[in-house]
Each structure stands twice: as structure tokens, then as C-alpha cells.
Picture 1 (cartoon, rainbow over the protein chains, first blue to last red):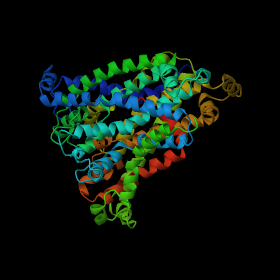
Picture 2 (picture 1 turned 90 degrees about the horizontal axis):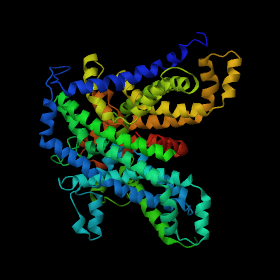
Picture 3 (picture 1 turned 45 degrees about the horizontal axis):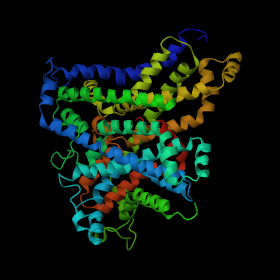
Length: 289
Length: 270
């Protein structure tokens, strides 16, 4: 093929277009279509808004949504912890590189692995309760996994434990990119660590903090499947205590074979995600400026 | 900054909390089953390696790992080829619709994978692609390619134009420029991409449990998710399984820490 042929660029991007059209394009169109159909197997008759009506009238759906919303409470905790740790690492105390390596470790371990490990640690007769008993903290001995009142909180603890690591690394890299002279000036003026952090560093990190909040929100809404799948024994248990939207879609699709219902929930989840993504791009653009 | 106990203490406590589950996993894996019943938190009296022998030779963990490896190699490889070709064209050629293509591809980075499972599952049922490597590889490749394109376009644009002009003067075709000039200069972003994408595919559970349901096709993450149900109460054995499953990533992380950190920051959207 001659170099100057106008077709060459299109040949280069053709595989990309095919791949994205197959995995995303076709899927998103079919998803919307299925949400208005009573699908049995691979297709079915149009039924208008019936799927949406069924879903919106089902208490289990709203319970799942409520659980996802409850997971949002982890976000301020993660921001606070990650910010503190990043600011401490930024002080470059002796050994800070080792701390950085260790603090990022939770994010490297796969969620299913760490969820299985934590599930064993938090069993009623497991090591966590053994230590609490040994410390005479009996009032804190809970059935972390097996009690419907506690299980979702345990999941939240696990999420904070792992996802905070991403915040630390994002915040630290932003700090490393800051202009040192301003910080040095503040130091020479005799500003304490707390004053430097509060008046000099944190105001310059607004963009990256917002960015982390938005990605965490997307995660809480649509990427906690692996956590609850393991902790809830594949069924969002005990009872429906750790049921979330993703698991609801999974159950409707795989366990009860109702792709139309699953599609309706997916469409709604996608619509909310689009809003968050829009927020993300706005934050990113501001961060780039 | 001479004597400041508080920051050291805070970092120490945080590091300890970050490490405890890994330490618990490794220490418990080396404990005898009977000893764990009585001593859940302490150091083992004697190290027992039998659990690792059981995991390696009496469970399908090697099969699961082989399946995961096939998916990683297939999807990361496919995605790299597709992304390199497209990113080169977008960064270095003029054609209609290229800005729109880049914008759409970049926007797809943020589509939650869970919204794709319904249509893909129905489609794959019809095409007979459930529990096939090829089918799963295409899905994973699709999910990781938008980020790869985004990263490579950014990098390819930063390469000096003179290099490419010189190759053009020598009569090289675009494909030759890409493979002989551009890619050799792009090893750092390529390594970052391989690591981040491999981590995503290796660690994924959602797609694995839906699209690879056959026992013979299970990935390591889907395998270990059912592990503890099957080996109920054999906690040291379960922990040995987790340690084996975690080992490849831990080794990669400690070897390529810089690339991990850089790539995960860039790909935080996923």
C-alpha cells in the first residue's frame, strides 16, 4: 500500500472501531432495547415500561440502592485518612519510602483474595474477636460477617482499608509535583506542619481531592461486586444485608434468568454513572488547567 | 524535624494496618490446622508446609492460574496491537473523524463493566461463546483498550517529529515507522500498560464468574471465591491458597513498583 493513500489511517483505526463497536457500541444499544422487552433466552416481545415498573416497585431493589448509598459514607473517611497519610509521607521522614511501598500494598492485592482473608479474620470465633477479648474489649466483639446488622459495616471497613491506598498515592503524587519554593517560604516564616498543610498544601490539592471523590463515588456505585460476592457468600447475605445493585443485576441475569429486568436496572445505573462521569471530566479539566 | 514521635507513630500504625492481613495470611498458611484452633493470632510453634503442597498438588489452582494467564496474555496482547495501531494513526496522521474517535474511546473508559454484562451474556449465549477463552479475551480486550489508546496517544504525540520525518525520507511505510521507530521508543509506557492491564484482567471477578462458568475454564479469582466454601473451617489451608494466588502480583509489584504506581495513577478511572 502506498504511503500517501488516504485509506491508510482508516486501516490503522479499523481494529479499534470493530473492537469498541462490538464490546461497547452494540452492547449499549441492545441493553436499552432489552430493558423494554420481556426477554426469554435471547429475545422477547416489547413490553414498554413494564420492566422499569416491576423493578421500581420491588423493595429489594430499593434496599440494594440504599446499601450502595450507605457505601458513600466511606468516601469522607478515605479522603481524611489518605490526605493525612499523604501529607505525612510528604515530610520525607526517614524510612518514608518503605511506608509508601507498604501503604500501597492493599491496592495491589486482588479484592477476592483480600476479602477471603478478611472474612476469616472477622469470623465470630476468629482472630479479631480473639484479640478484642484478650484486650477486655468484649463490648466490641461482634458477629462481623454473620450478623445482618453488622455485615455491611464490615464490607465498608474492607473498602476503606483497600481503596484509601489509591487516595494516598494520588495525593502524594500531586504533592510531589507542587512548587517547593512556596512551601520552603512558609517553612522559613516559621509555619508549623499543621499550618503549612492547612494553608499552603491542601488548598493546592483541591483538584485531585475532587477527582478522588468522584472516582470513589463511581466505585461505590458500580464496582463493589467482588467485595460483596465474597463477604456475602455470593448471595448478598446474611439475608439481603449486603445486597448491592451489581449483585441485583447479576442475580436477575444469571440466577433468575430475567435479562429484561437486569437490563432495566443496568440502564438506570448507566444513566447515574454518566452524571458522575460528566462530573469527573469537569474535575479533570480543571485539574489540567 | 529532629524528634517528632507523632508522625512516625501515625505512619507506623497505618503501615501495620495495611500489612496485617498479608501477615495473617502467610503466618496462618504455615500453621497446623489443630494449632490454629487454639492459637489464632500468635506465631506458629512449628512451620507446616503441607498446606502449600496440598494447594499446589490436590486442588485445581494451577489450572485456574493457567486459565487466568491465557486470558491475560490474550487480551493484553490483542489490546496492545489494536491500541498501538489506532494510537499511532490518531497521534501522527490526519484523517476525518479522528478527534471524535479519540473522544469516544476516551469516554468509554468510564463505562462501568457491569452495564455490559446483560447484552454480552445474551449475545454470547446465542453465539455459543460462554465459557470460551476467545469470547472472554475479546471482552477483556475491549474493556482495557480505551485506556491504552488514551495513554499511547498522549505519549506518541510527545515524540519529536524529526524522527518520523527522517524515517519517511528513508522511504519507510507507516507500519515500519510504528514498529521500528515509535515502539522502541515507547517501552516505558508499554510496560506500564502491560502491568496495569494484566492486573485488571488477573484480578477481575465479575466477568470471570459470568463468562467462564465451566469448571475447566475457571480463573484463579473465580476459583478462590468458592475456595472457602469448599474448604470450610480449614482456614490454614484456605490461607495457603490465597497466598499462592496472591504471589504473582506481589512479586510483580515489588519488582516493578514504579511502573505499577505510575500506571495505576494514570488509570485510576477504571
